[in-house]
Image (cartoon, rainbow, N blue to C red; front, top):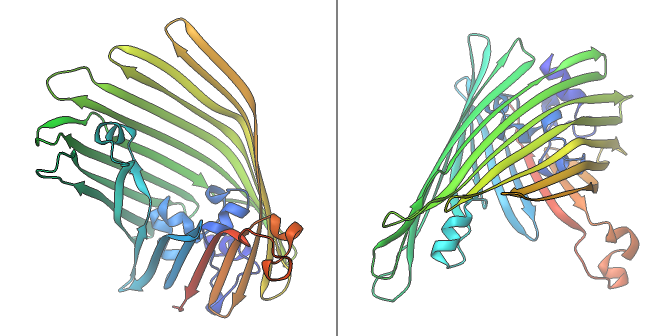
Length: 372
């Protein structure tokens, strides 16, 4: 059943041995619909799905630089994944106390392991973060930080995918004399996710899904001063669908509600906030123009509402945010390249012809599949 869905969801990108592959860029240009698509990028959300995407390498490029690269390898009945990313574990408090352009803790590496345990697809993920900037006798502040994220996922009844992730971050800042000036207070993250693939009919799959995400961060100065802390919670519930029309057209849609709320406590003064999308809509279209070329279009619409309250002072806003994307893919044998096309390319034309500036694409993903 799962293999059937993955094949339907990837028409136009079917490669050697009948395995279909895709990337971060494909998910983006299909309306940011990664949670309701069978896609290689799901391995970070649901590590047990790594076993569906074996023996490949992928590179993601954004803004002119490589932002992530990874490999999936099958060996001995299991699948092993490794990723290197430029992302950071963001922590504004570390930046405030260090004052040296530091915005978070660097990702060092991520590992994923998946295999079948008695008929239950199981996966485990491990990500390590860390960096250090130590100064001695040069009148500059120092800092050090470390973070760890663990995840586990299991698929029940062949269709219900579940996952749990936990993370913990710690850091400390020092003055030029080497004395600790502040350290983290909080720095934890918990995420629970679930989705169910229900085949309504041939070519039509419905995917209800749920996400709970909780995070905390803060700083505690040395000498017993008052801590500054933040706590945040996000709940998202939605229902998406994959609709295969003929052999060349795939439609993906999702509608749901997203609630985000939190508190900021600074020296006993608490600010409450919320930022909700009630509802959000997203959709994407993928057309196999030929055996080698694929066209995509996707968009997101969020009906947003925010509230900020400190004491008896309150500020409310509402509006609607819209994001739209044009995507394209080129496939040649086991190699594929996906692009988030710059809309200016269609109005300005190629630089070699018109002299107009700007890149052809704002995001590119390349993937190579070497078979079973």
